Length: 527
Image (cartoon, rainbow, N blue to C red):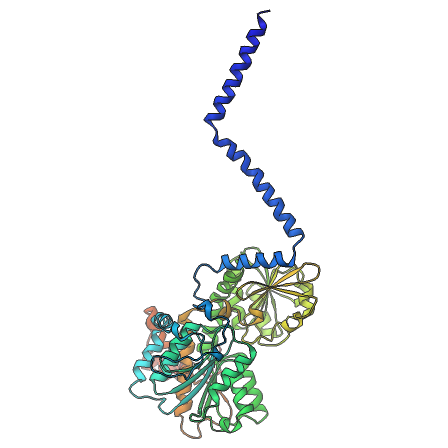
């Protein structure tokens, strides 16, 4: 009979102990509930992903876009959102001097753009040095230069150098996505007739070029081009102006190819300088610039991790070599496509597997074009790509990826970030297209300032050489920059590294058959 009370008291003690433990560790209830909420949330997200509606996808895209662009990126132009809906062509703007001879996104951004230019000048000491050395002589006095290049802080330093050397300049952009609006505003404020803004339409692009050329009181006598669009426009639309041009300087593979075509057809009636194949452009800008900027552009747009990813790079020229070196260093598995057996052999010797695109298109995670050709990646390739494959271009022109073939009713385009589109197939497969197939690094990120100083200095010297050359030195053909000038550009940049060149003795110079001051290599030498 006594066992019942004892059992009851034992139960009471046990219950009291449980209550005490519960109070002592009350926070445990929160922890035990949290996973259930997380599991439920994951299930909800799973259900959401399983049955995405168009509205749902778009609202999610806006959310991603907003969160990914909250932090400041120098690749994105500073823009007042209130101006986004108004085309610059419809605005009436004047700078502080009362001039309206320009068309930019917002002239009020000039002060911010000036700071960007001043930052770029700090790492372009060689170009600034050239400006200071030649400023007194004004070797470009009387030159009326019409230019079509990327409009960034670095090219602004070049434009202002040309002005300081005596030239008058009118400028447009060679890429509809690469213009830094604040820099364009700063140039307009400084008196440069600049017609460019980020996000131009195709019609805007050609309108801007025409505004630079078609001027009643001003006629260009020099062209600085990047891609050949400006040269083509002047040649086709203003033949009388083209005939009076004293020289063309071109810096891209695409533009140089067009010049050689004109020359071969006997239609090039002015001398032109091929800067793209100068040593100081090809071996520095094309190689080292792309080695760094390819990763910058891909990381900013996609947040992709490269370790273990399979990447195919189409083309193993200097741009391709730079891209592959960077990707390999981060642990990517890199394939190469090539038409040239010499470049293909170089790729093999560098440890890359050379393949046809069709052989790997189903398995790769990233496709990068850098050939300067057209239709390198076709609709057939795009149809066969795996889900979430990233497709981008590092060549100058937007012809390498057949983007036009993707603008069909059965495919859905979804903008998820600035310059990032998901192209969605009917079965739900997505291909991540960057910058609509245009140049990745200048459309989606920035490029190293120092290496652009090398290219800009080369361009400036080419303009000076063509403009001041005595009659008869250059005929109606395409020329490479003289070796002596290449070496001079390189020498201007060596002090940045505190580099000290060894000087030949008279006996050594005689033995090699060289001038002690250069040039040190024959024109046929391949660096």
